[in-house]
Image 1 (cartoon, rainbow, N blue to C red):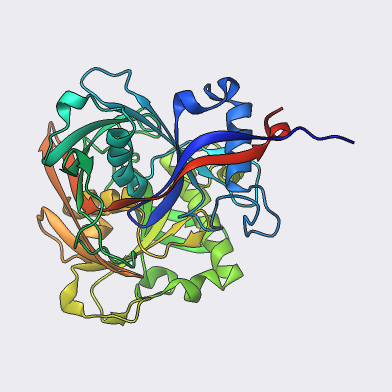
Image 2 (cartoon, rainbow, N blue to C red):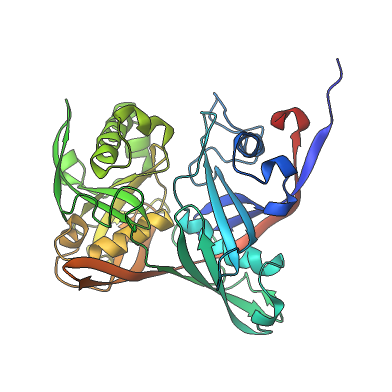
Length: 396
């Protein structure tokens, strides 16, 4: 029996923030995969190595974690006053689906760099030396993001001395602005989908919890760490090695998604793994990060732990950081109260790998909270570029 040879597709493997993913230009994909649908999903699943019952993604580019099972498709923007259209696909590790329901804030840091290096930004807008402002249209969430990318001698500057907890080596700093990061009401309601800063979330056979539901950056459910039996200082092994705890979190997430209006039935959460995120917060405490660094209570305004794709994240998702900064800026949310309450325009929070600072400006308009933008710094680097190869029958 004969088999067709593999096909090869131009691609770039990049780190953005604390994530890695495979980046494609839309017009480099096979024609059938240039449109949303089954063929595109099959292609991305095979590139990453999913679904994998061994949960290792050995036969693909994925790294078997939510942070490394990611894909990005970029094209010259179809939106006025934007440079690049950015579409993000979170690839399930053990299930045959790609979740298109949200953005990846970490990989956003690499979008501007890729766009500059791959001809998606007009040459006239790229300085010989200085900062190139890349205007990104985030297709998944229909929002504008601005990336400030350093350029040296006409090329993206990737090396530098900016350190990001959760990333081993320093690199050049890329500042990211998420404009109008709150939901506009099309998917699950306004920024606070229930209309409340704090709600009661009742989960059958598990309990009743205070929760802040917010659509900013990415739909997120915030809980108090102490209410669910944690301190807020936990590292990955404390939760990811506990199957019962993970199942409990997933059940809470499913009921929270329903209360947010993101799903109509609890069963739908299984096919919507990327959103909403679930996180728990606590007041500052001393702990030792995953790298062995001591984080003192004075180093942070609050502690946050977040789960992504069913596992505790090793650091913090960029979009969840936007949700944290936004919620912290609004007096009365669980995030704001954990940080000490009151008005604030920035917080430094502790996560399993260290700390991160994120800023957001919140104002009230007609009795409703509005956040114009959230800002944080990340870094990005090309790890490999060339082609990825997949068996031709993968996309038959």
